[in-house]
Length: 473
Image (cartoon, rainbow, N blue to C red; front, top):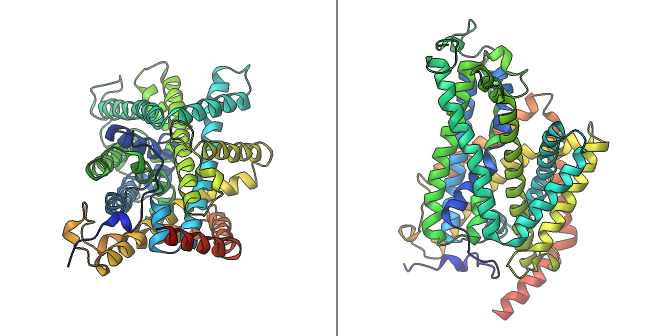
């Protein structure tokens, strides 16, 4: 059998510039993954699952992320397109799946941008109470828009430093927190491992509590898949993407698991859930007088980093979908720097609408929208693994040799099948938590509505565009 050209399976859409370096790619993925879910939400996970339970939950969450990224690496190295999993879904599942994937992911991240702006605005308002929160949100919106519109290199450089601050904070926390446990920092003496000796066993609230924390844990890992979207503008993706994916997986899992281990070792699990910022609490015990201010600054940069990555991902998704006829043609227009500026602006517009719902309907619409983001992430991860299975089948059907692939997902088909099953288990866990059940009631109807919209209003137009493109080719 002869090898085939994989780029023909999912052709690259011309126009974007490959100006992003591997270090940018690494930090974009880390920046999109490490966010307020770790800095603010990890305490609640420890409180629910207990010390060992929380560590186990983050290990399992990291394993699920790793499986998904292995699938994404094979796809991305073979077909480094900016639309990434949205384009793969259109090609290897169906155009309706690609349409649903793209729009659902765009809505998900645009809402997250609004949440990031709100978090950053509240921190600035606490520092400068004379300036309203919404003004800070507007300032951050303009600043991130400019970073994204200037060039992909400017965006990548900004994200590199944003993410670098978070990484430095986590490394510093792990070192100083370990000092508290073993007695070489602070004035309390060695705390030891007493927090891990619970009177009710390894899982003080039962093993079922670990199961119920998985949606929050997996949600905190989501964003790592941004490496696939950014690969479309990365230098030498065949070489850089596999190296970056291996690197970010190791770093993210180590950062999360070690940080949660330190938190569980220094804060009794009964108290962890009521702390506004468990990281600030641990720094405060070291005798650092400005510990809360330091962590507020870290959370600020974390929120801006996540918003920056989300804005980038959204604009590229819209650009990719417009090239496939799954979004309006005006979203494919690029400015002089090769940036899809209309995609940036329309994403910010939706984010600002989400800010309005947060202000005027915080107890209803906004909370429902935010609760669906974890579900969306799991669905996207399922799509990625599903695409990898179908790509491998199509590749071999057309006569391709597996040995010729630049990167091969190991243990095929075990890895993609397990990635799908484990994400389904996480989704099912939502039903057993009354506070999270609303995610299912809002998320799946939204998914169905987007899918049905394509079938009713877009399918015929998409087929006509596809036929036209084939005739031109």
